[in-house]
Length: 122
Image (cartoon, rainbow, N blue to C red; front, side):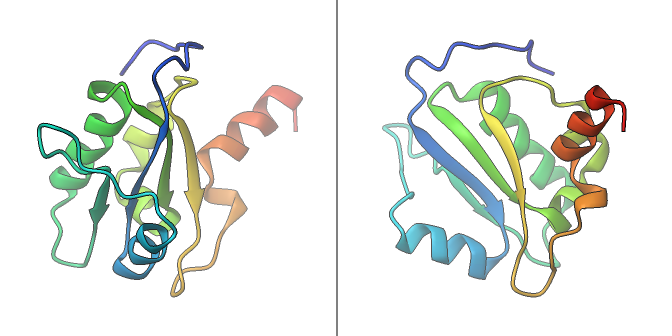
């Protein structure tokens, strides 16, 4: 995993790993980007998507790309790579688990919320 960093310089993009509805909505809102190497800042995940592909996208957005400021991931997809998500501790890109149309948000599964509760002693 990447070492924790607090340097946001050059990080100006959102990235998303999500189901088709979530990604489409965010793309329509204007977050889509394709860089000069034809790398996209989004990944659509469905039932056929291999867990290894999700982990590869997570690594690309959190470790390899230095232009991502925030990574949004559907919570039910984060569950598929939960050990990887739980190990992630860098400040940038910030990691946010979001609900989807079919899967409501469950705060008991959110890695960031768990970390905050642990720090507060809850």
